[in-house]
Length: 166
Image (cartoon, rainbow, N blue to C red; front, side, top):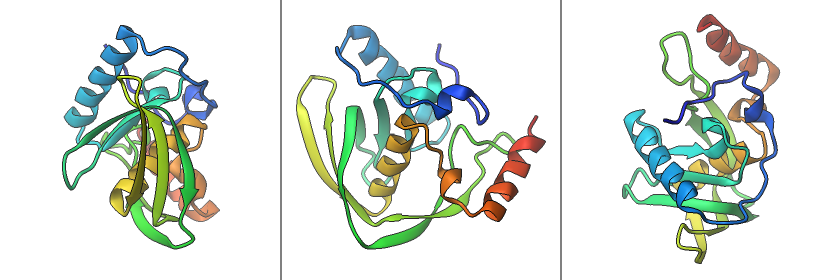
């Protein structure tokens, strides 16, 4: 049974290592992550959030409900155009046990390459919400949290809510 790692857990700040083999265990872990993400009404979950310092993630396009299982994902290009959207994270929870949200500026669109669970190379151009999700989740693989993009004042406001949880 996977367990969610919360803000303050050091694994969330680790740079994850690439996955070298697609094993039945990795596939099972990703399936369990998809279930966990859905149960918690999330749209993405990266390996470090469930205790693995490896480069894999699962995410869902909220517009189509399509599930992506990405192994060793890389954002190969980002648009110059940016947009501000509200972000939350299943690892950054407030005192009510729900994600704390804040507005974050990111590129509007990205191009992503990854290997799927069958070992096939995939490439996709993503824009809008799905681009936001893939950027948020791949950041986790580099030990970056969405709060790192906030101003000092905004970050402190989010962290105050997180600390009230403890």
